[in-house]
Length: 112
Length: 119
Image (cartoon, rainbow over all chains, first blue to last red; front, side, top):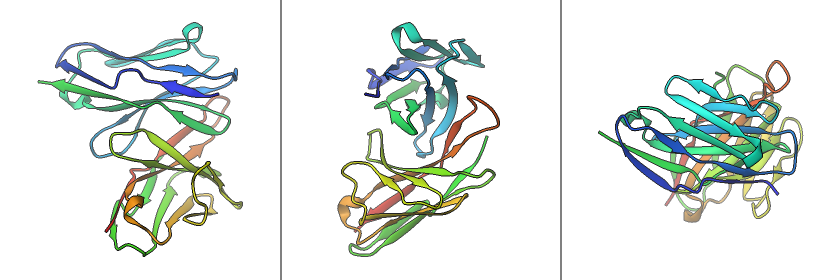
């Protein structure tokens, strides 16, 4: 079965703090993709990153970084020096067998 | 990145009427598009997979006759909510599959969503 778990329902931090959003996935397949999307209050899903199952190299993009560990089936997302504009719901998703499996989302509140 | 548009962005209709939502991939061809439904403060629920030139594949529990999907071309898929009722009020999101230019380059891009309110 395919499943994505985002155990953190809501996180509140103060601006400039670092925050990590957890994502754990389940799949029996060896070939799959992992994604992170941001959904601001406007509702539009914003693509952040895609990782395929054969590329465990961690990635950094500005204040964003991702840690992919197949050994623990995790794909965690860290925002460094958070800003108010980072406030949104973040979804982790697994894509294989031609379908997306979304986690339940983590709402991030960044307070000034 | 690639752009997917949805129209309309918001729609209010009376109970019993039908509503059509369009999803377009603007700068790439999408052989497969997906339709999702999202309730407030919840995750996205896949409704159906739309394949160009063939019938859509619906997820379990989704009424085919209620939610009509037509993938008329490589850049357009439509979702028609027939005989809409207040419980159909929701946020509908489409996505288009872009196979990319190489191995492991596949990505899906999401439309901005359509908020449907049925009175």
